[in-house]
Image (tube, rainbow, N blue to C red):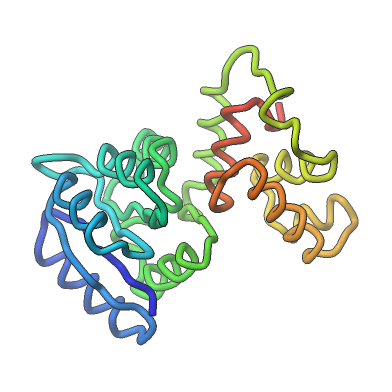
Length: 217
């Protein structure tokens, strides 16, 4: 059973999410919070697998709460930012804060359920409508003179290449086609790379790649 905490300042939104998620059968909503500080306290007490986090909330925003949650003691839950705002600034801020995924509140219920399942399984995701824009924003904000020697030292040449392609927006299948290898091979190399650099999912691996200059120019 996937344990979820819902964080939103509107009770009716939390009630709707609870209904959608618990109808899935393999998801249990174990707690709710109406602001960022309350979310941090709840997560520390309940240790959920996934936190569905709103961005704008009175009394403490979701980005600050996300930073505090992902910086906590393990096991650290995956944070899925669920918001009405699809502005690049919010998306970028959420991923920089350590979120593993981003979906909009007007997404279909099945999409929300799928997002929770994917994050619980260690797969990060970003809403398809904003994925390319987010990557473009990472590219725009990247350091002028990135240095990759030390952070990437532990990666093999193939692992480095796969992380770079991932940061360029390619899927596993597209990376496999580019390198003329099996998708399972890409997954294996990517998994080892993530273990070495300490990222928990694909999204945070992209963040790491841009922070460390290991991304296509």
